[in-house]
Image 1 (cartoon, rainbow, N blue to C red):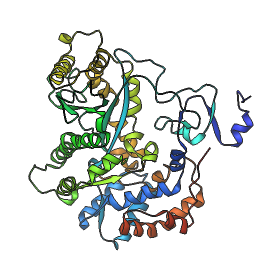
Image 2: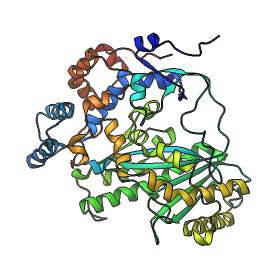
Image 3: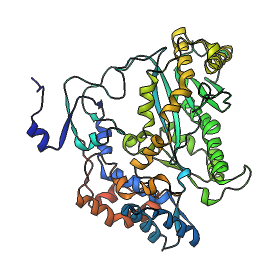
Image 4: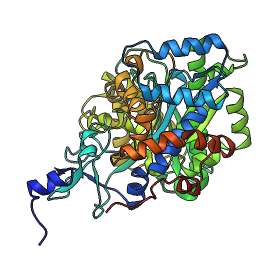
Amino acid sequence: MPPTQASHSAVRNHNVLISVLFVVKSKTRHTAENSLHCAMSFTLTTAATHFILSNDAASVEACSDLKKTDKVSESSEFAFQQVSKFHNDMPIKPAKRSCILSTDDTTEFVCQGEGPKSLGSQHSMGGFKLVASKALSHASTRSKFATGKKEEDLRGLRVKLTHTFTATGMSAPVFVSVCSLSERELSVKDCPSGVLILDLAGLCIGGCGVNVGSTLKGCIIFVRNDNDKQTDKVRFRVHRDRVFIPFVETLHADVDGWQKGDPVEDDLRVVSWADGDLAQAATTVEEDNLEVYKDLKILANKQSAARSATEQAADLSLVFKSHHSLQKSVTLENVDASNCPMKKRVIQGFQEMHCKGLSLNTTKKNALIDFLSCLPESLTKASSRSKVVHGFVQNGLVGDEAKYSSKYGFPDFKLMLDTVRRDVTKEEYNLCESSFPELLLFQMKHGFVEEAEFNRLGYPKKTSLV
């Protein structure tokens, strides 16, 4: 029979702690998240894209910005100095914090009224698991993963929320995806494209239901499941055109005084990180999209999808966890629409969609109406500036310089290596430092570092943890 408890000596000797809350993770994710190769690839991509050649004055300003506090991170200075040496000591500066973006989807299971309190991102599987001490030290940000059997899929209506955050704590407008609708739910006759789009004023952080008269629009897309590959690409295109690009333009205008139609200077380079869903990657490299990105100086970086939970700033923020918890307890089920302008707008929006071919059953429709009506309130509570910024500090993209007050985002070499879930040894850390110049050269030439190059330099091979 399996043991019902672990001995204190076993826990102490193996540097683990006991946890009864965890989620199942595949061996692929275990391997990627514990790989020094992957962490260095993330670090090198950051070094190659987050620094901009500049004039002397701007470079001096950036250096001064880094030294605003007495506690300057040596690993932030290391990355800065290494990139400067690569450019033959030419003046450089990091991208502005407001121009460092992270985009990721999160899935909510919605129902009318309050959700079951026992459901969450972490589940008790019965008994216990031994979890690395380092994993528990990051428990507020990262889930405690363990291997084991998959639980049965949760029942309910699945809704995707696409979030785009900046390293200064700002959030893009709301983008909600209701996917995998049947032909009965989204009529082929009335909607041959398989996609319906609903823009709702006030569906935003601090929107209707929180503030009176909110007019900023959120976007909801309904997608039929007849051609998942193509419709998923349509979903990303809609997000790009209606949310992401307008958000970047607004950032330039509000933060830097840019006006639409003016050329975008190199100083306003936007570094956009995403986990590289296949459909998302395919739409990113489309010719018309590349032209738009080129004009707006948007540099798209793909993160390892298998390491999203340990290196993706949006995932590492406290927003997702906070909103998952709030979403179960916030409801307007028993509030009449006449007393809730947001609920009234949502109901009117569904009536418009019904005329265009959307025909959801009562359970699904009521669940969505309740969820969307509460969304401005729940997101306002979950998406505070500090909760958003937390993710960009955790993965090292901006480090912890000047307690978030600095203008520039200085990548922190040590924190980026710390995205490895296991403890990095001193010897491994020294290897990463000493090989950094050679690997950066390879990265600049090819856009990525091959596995064989890491092996040649003596990096430990990827192993799967059991």
